[in-house]
Image 1: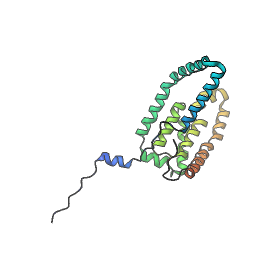
Image 2: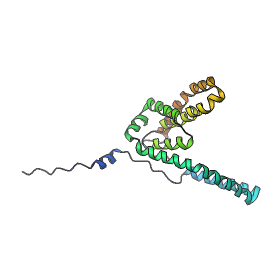
Image 3: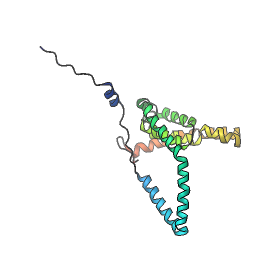
Image 4: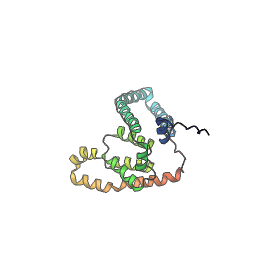
Length: 202
């Protein structure tokens, strides 16, 4: 009686790919971009009617120079977010900051946002990367709100020297619960607006 053929184990790369959750596809043009485009067109028309083509060209020239100045920082921030999305282990991030992380996930997001250095060119790509690798809306909202309200970089560079130690400490203490509450509310609303399996609009 012949032995049944033994199946070869799946290659390690295929097994690793099967463990990773599918990434959320991002649309290049969403409702937010369409709305901004409409607002830009309306604003340009109003400026043209008031100041003529010279007024429009002056604003366009100034904004192109501004865009050229911030483009390297935008590129660096986007690259940072892309690299973080590749490096972070999806399973661990989902366990620590995912929908089932509970209060612990909100506290971790709050702490991470408080110590995250840099400006919006760093914070928002990092937040997008966390969403990509398994963090839920609640923990990511807690991180962004914490970075906005508590961020130690601004406190050390601006608040301490200008407003003093007492004001800075009390402002931080009073702000501490807000990211957790915002994250809990975001998680509550997200679960009800987008049932399990439904994708939010990008």
